[in-house]
Amino acid sequence: MNRLRITQMANKYMNHEMISLHTELPEFPDGRISLLYTVLSHQPGAVPHKDLLSIVTSLVQMGLDTHDMVENETNPAQKGMLSMRAQQLKVLAGDYFSSRFYHLLSQAGRSRRFAILAKPYATSTGPR
Image (cartoon, rainbow, N blue to C red; front, side, top):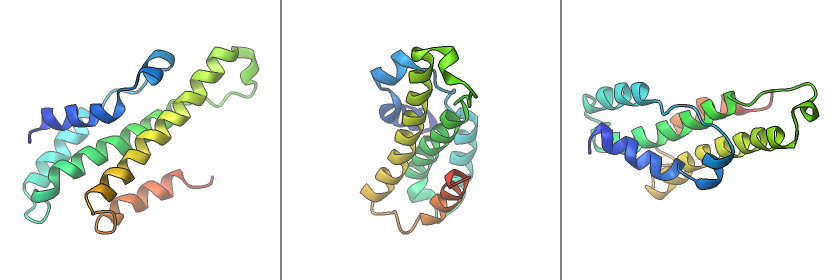
């Protein structure tokens, strides 16, 4: 599999009509995923898993970037109902992308082995 295919596979999990119609998403992290893919390609222990790791990392990064786009308004009612719904959808979209991270790892039987990937994510999204 190549880097273009990684992007296509990740997009399969990210393209949803409801999300694309009602809110904006951040750009796909092509540069980061290309760098990760290249580094993993030169790590003997990671080579068999480089595709999976690249896909799940792109999904969790999209989840984090989507959450970063949520505006914390002091008075959300001023912007109107549509704006408020778009913000709520961003939160849900970010959560959905992040859930695909765990889902794909568990489907591959790798959730325990790659739990090290989940720890920083869980720390960054925990209670504030």
